Image (cartoon, rainbow, N blue to C red; front, top):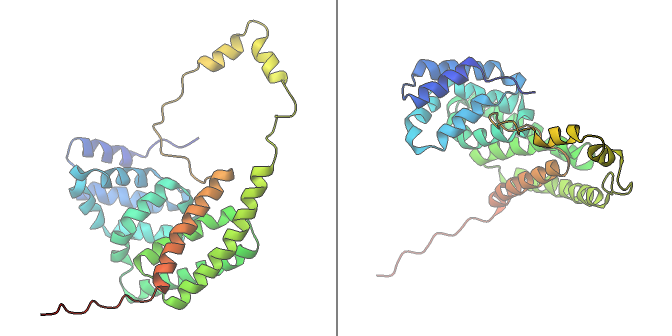
Length: 262
């Protein structure tokens, strides 16, 4: 069960609706998110993604981009808790804000070298994962590499290494997808089971009660970590995005257009 939204998240939502957001509240929101990175809560990411999707809140987005603690948050996600990128809410936040926030905390030469070291370690993880290990464990690494190289394109040699790694992963991914699609569905061979008999027996009150229970409102951010065939589908999409960046890095430069004839 997901925890309730934090007080800073609630305060931010109220301040946004009342058009009274302050820099101090943005700072508190970012500080709480930074401290909660190991817990992988996505309320901070969900709120600020909503802000990014609202043109009327462009001033609020500028306030977050100017917050140095928010830049520390995106670096902490990429370097320390990148498994949280399996959460679609956090990944969507990173896709939008990392090019803006990452430029603040990672613009120095030392931070850039840290990012380069992270990219190299992630590539090694993909190479080893292409040969063995669970495929679903590679989703966060592929997404992290996509974020890093979307901001700092790889050199041609690194791009070719990426393409070889993703090609090996795709081979395993195709086999895993075929294996899952060929497995018989559970419960299809047993005919009507006791569950069906119980649902229609007696007074029917238990079955009717279960069917008549109202669905809980979807007021919380999406569930993290895709599972099953859906997890493999997310991995395939992530590989597509990373391949596009690597192919662009290996493409020959476009020759300049000749000057127009007088």
